[in-house]
Image 1 (cartoon, rainbow, N blue to C red):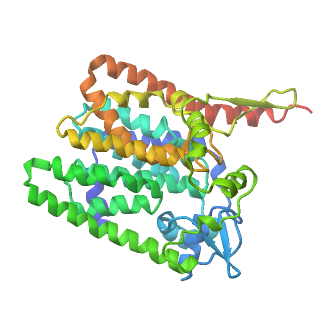
Image 2 (spheres, rainbow, N blue to C red; image 1 turned 45 degrees about the vertical axis):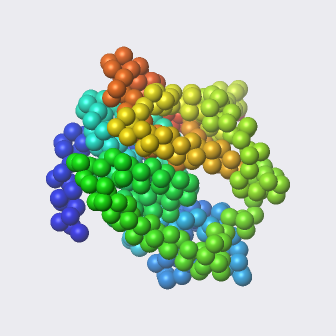
Image 3 (spheres, helix red, strand yellow; image 1 turned 30 degrees about the vertical axis):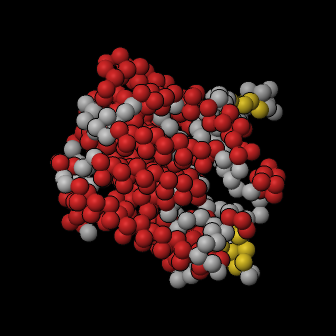
Length: 417
């Protein structure tokens, strides 16, 4: 394992390492001392699930948020991959683990993988570097790295796995690894599984180095191994937790406030959520609230900022095309639309602590970035120039949300009351 790690590091260019180090440093600065005050006594179900795995059972050791009760025991309702990732760290540090010391590393990995994805799609290096910065620092990735919440860590895991699968499908096209990438992404965030048709069709219609159709078909079949293992893990975990492989536990969750209002009347998924979620996804603006004394203490409003205001560079993807295989292009956009629609029909899509972002957008952003990369590759210097300015704006807005405003909040908290 150590030798494999050394080989991987040797393959990374110095430019990739510099990019990853830059992203790591920026994210670490935004977290600052918050990492040392992080604790999970009654929160972060992924940490508690990892602790349960270490002790050979599914039941959590205590009732916590996002856990449901069954026969006097408490169980997580979330897919298990993020908890499995945390197992070795919880083994070392127990429930006192500081996930905020891990998440910046995931941010650096996301930047590196995005850079490689752009280069594999034949984007010039300078533009590829900007794309990597855009994803890691100009989207909801920063939000999910900055706050130590269970669902946010799951988003980070899903993005890493989906980017790994995309790099494989535009790279060596090893079906076995691709299947595990897509499968583990779905074991973190279920909606990401809706991108599977894109991966299969890309293997068939966009073969690497002119491979024959029969070889491409064998690669598709090889993906079934990873997908079957991932699906089997999920079904077995559900059986162990809730007595049925098809019972995910979501319907058992006792919600409160507006979550309960939605759940009791319309369930987890319903078109009734579409209008309000559309507004929040595409129209809500950047917002700072002020509290006493004298309404001078700023803090970020926590209902989120839409993609239009937080990450406007994403809309350049609308000009992106996979011209080498029209069917792949069409199916790719349909997969983006399907994941986006599923998100917009979800009762909790815009809930939680959403600072300057819509975190559920991360379910479809990795695939959308393929089209953004293509748009930049085919769009010329003017398109690239516009993109760079929009990335500067998006990163600056995130920096304000996660560094400047919290810093001012802390400094002004000492004003006399």
